[in-house]
Amino acid sequence: MGSTLDDRFASLVRVHSPAVGNYLRRRLYPLTRSDLDDLVEETFIVVWRRIDDIPPQAELAWIIGVARNVLRNARRSKQRRSRFESSLTPRADDSSAEDYVIGDSSVREALLKLSEEDREIVMLNAWDGLDTTAIASVLQTTTNAAAVRLTRAQARFRDAFVAADVR
Figure 1 (cartoon, helix red, strand yellow):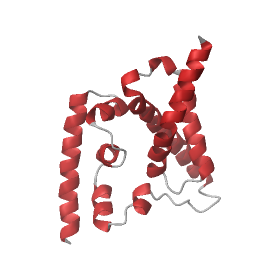
Figure 2 (cartoon, rainbow, N blue to C red):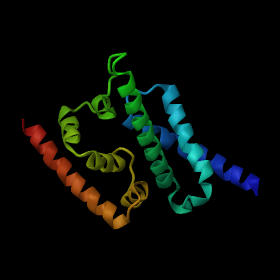
Figure 3 (cartoon, rainbow, N blue to C red):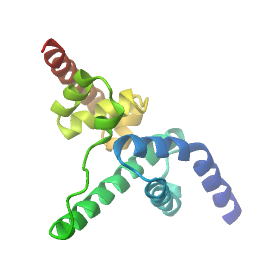
């Protein structure tokens, strides 16, 4: 029985770690290889602990949801550390991945006008290629709620993009 779990875990890591790495890389910049490896590793530690909870039909979406939580925890830790160190050292560059990845200033400007929730759902769909079922799993909501949120976020993005592009 242990061997079957080991095999399933090895398969999950082999199949999904590139997507998890890409998800994390696109949301955190600058990111050292070591930081990325640590976050991917933390994600798969949770996957190992909760391997029986992973829905077979939505493995990637479930694992991306774990990565999202790991990233949130890492950001909170970084913020606490930054507040503590702020009097000792200059504040580190807090630029987001959008600042560096998106070359089109209109797209960047439109993304930055969105709320964090809208930006995340648009990025899950456009950058990570997740459909509404997978997005629902990542956000821990229903497929219908994810579809409505995505449609509304896309509309707000379009409005912000048109406004940014007009200038």
